[in-house]
Every structure is written in C-alpha cells, then in structure tokens.
Image 1 (spheres, one colour):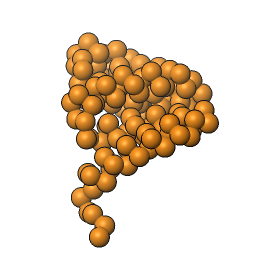
Image 2 (cartoon, rainbow, N blue to C red):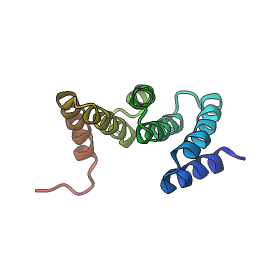
Image 3 (cartoon, rainbow, N blue to C red):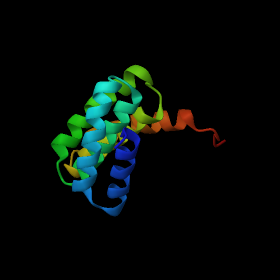
Length: 124
C-alpha cells in the first residue's frame, strides 16, 4: 500500500474513533517517512498524527515524546508555521489533561501568537 494511502486509511480509522487501527496504519506511514523523508514536514505531520492516536488512547507520555520530536523538526523548518502551532497547542492539551495549567497556558500562548501572525484576516 503506498504511503499516502496508508496515511489516508489511518485518518479514516481515526475519524471512526478506531485509534488502535489508526495508530497501526499511521505507524507504518511514519516508518516509511523516517526512511524516505527524514527531518521533513511530512515526517512531522506523521508524528503529530500518531501523537493524536496516543493522546486519545490515554498514552500521554508517548504523545508528548512524538510531539516534542515533531516540534524540533517544525521549529527548524517552519518555526512560525501551522505545524509548529499545532505541536504547541497539542502539547498544551497534554499539560491540561495532566492538570499542569501553568505550562499549558505558556504553550497555548505561544501557539496563539503563531496563529494570530498567520491570519489572513486581521481584526481591527
């Protein structure tokens, strides 16, 4: 199965709420991307997606590790981009789930700063 089909099938499983199957398929996509496109934004997206499966399955430690790896990549390649924003926001969600609200707020504010900068429509 080509990588994009694998990633797409993982997304379909995720949207069905089948996080085990989604994680299995996204893990395959991640392994391929690690080989084909190391340190790329497509690799970061795979890490972010797999982190979502881990988060929704209650494995916060694994989700955090995956997001930290994705964040390291996105900060290097697109420090003010949407994937960096996504990593920061999702890390904030992990801290909220753990009850670590001060750290969550810091991450959310960093995420919001990037989001506001990238808005095509700016409020007056």
